[in-house]
Length: 266
Image (cartoon, rainbow, N blue to C red; front, top):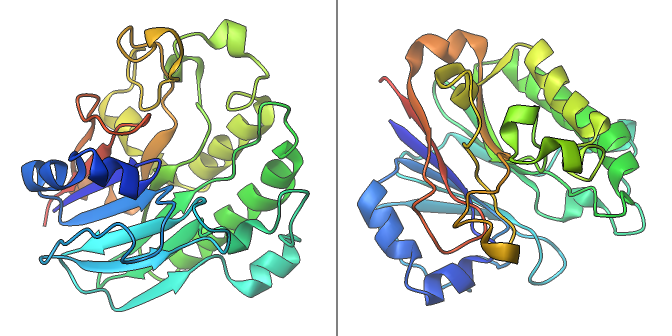
């Protein structure tokens, strides 16, 4: 079974460039998780007849949003984080709004696992959303994952908007304490690992730089591979024997992010 996660930075834009359908036809994922769709279902006019579509679009038009396209019919689909966790962790918004209304999480339940697709709030260049992320979003999201994991194994993916270690970005020294590489954001990934979830790409490729999933548009960064690895697939540790392959697809164009993949043995 092949799963792919991709921050498309606007599904309509990628589709209009003629790059979305050829990508799906070439890689043929069984399940495709998208972030930053910036659309509602039907707006992109994407016709993937093999797939069932499930969307969590932001209340704000043209902003954020997640979607799951799957060939396997899920038992259930849940949008957002549970209300009790939103209340417990005070996810009632900051100066930018309530992150639980921004279409940032969609969960599909299958016979043997949960698939969680997430688009984590960006801390912003001036770190004005770092407190929301560090004190509210990250702990709420992790408690949600642990709650699901008690029922059945979890696969979760998406744009987490953080490079975990110095190996996960080209210039760690100059970006120390900048958004996407603060100790607070990195602590969020540390806590995910401590809770028993596994970064599948780093499990398959434990050492080395140069493996990135996002590049700025400035100074030909993508051509020079001056990037960041901020898109992930994690699994519950007990799923590790099922993991066959975890890769990054930097050759896929259309967005400032590239897709990441996870292949599981049936």
